[in-house]
Amino acid sequence: MVKACILSVSGPELTLGEAALFRAENPWGVILMGRSCVSRMQVRALVADIWQATGRETLIFIDQEGGRVARLKAPEWPLFPRGSDYAAIYAADPERGREVTWLGHRLIASELASLSIHADCAPVVDLPVPGAHDIIGDRAFGTDPAGIAALADAALAGLAAGGVAGVIKHIPGHGRAFADSHYELPRVTAGDNELSKDFDAFARVAHAPMAMTAHISYDAFDPGKAATVSRIMIQDIIRGRIGFDGLLMTDDLGMKALGGTLKERADASIAAGCDILLHCSGFLQDAGEILAEMTEVAKAAPGLKGKAEARAAAADAIAKKLEPFEAANGWRRFHELFPPAGAMA
Image 1: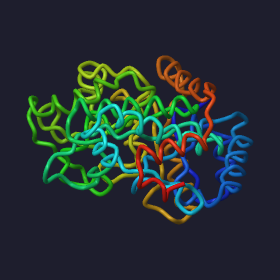
Image 2: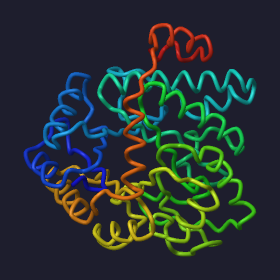
Image 3: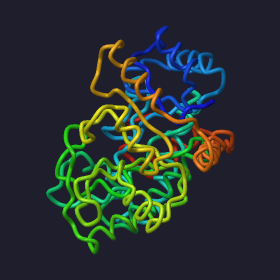
Image 4: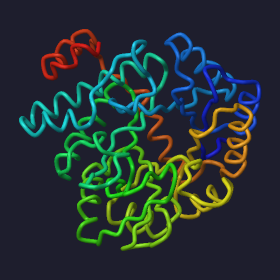
């Protein structure tokens, strides 16, 4: 049975221990971190090894937003703009902003699909506020819910046209956090009226195939408990008020915003209503430690079934829909729309 989890790889090659774990637990997906992306040939070989271990074309994920969050780095791969760069163009010319955002993400999809990576943890739909922690900052598509949603929708469409399923994040909103959830649990004290703006941005792209939760506590709804493990936030806000009915994955369970053991975090996330457990081991470097953590998460993950399985199948299906596209022409048009990108290709 396929397990309801996304695991990672400790380096550029799949270790014997990781291959054995993937064979035994059969994770639904695998996410590649920067430590696993050295060259095109190497990534292709790694994906092939993952598929051999799981016995199927397991969906491969990556964080490739553009800007500072990009696992595929220059000079091996092109650089892409930040969310704030697209927002600046949109502010001056909405039509041009939507076109360049679609095209930028269609070009990202071309890069990913050529590596058999068909899921991107992007776009960011968070609404940043003045004074908040810069963990979101220039990754955001501006500060207006309607504008953020318009560009996020264009990004999702561009990815999908290239056979890549997007993951909107961090639902229901990370932009008001005054701390980095990698290290502690941020507490958002804003009231319902203010948070409605954050929720509105996500509601406008609730048709996205996948979403990633925020390890954030919202005092107005369930104080002291991260949305990832809060049934109130998932059922009442994300599923109900925002109206998101796609596949809901946790943010990285290894982040320090969540207390307890990895098994306790996994159990709480599933009980709250998450469909998929994500574990990246972003804090660790030792392959043995990473394998031990992944094993704990995989063992705690339930089998993928019911609504979660149907949602996963819908995301998988996007990888099989690749529309014709000439990358060279795409880059030429992209340079016309976004001149600084001339140094990116």
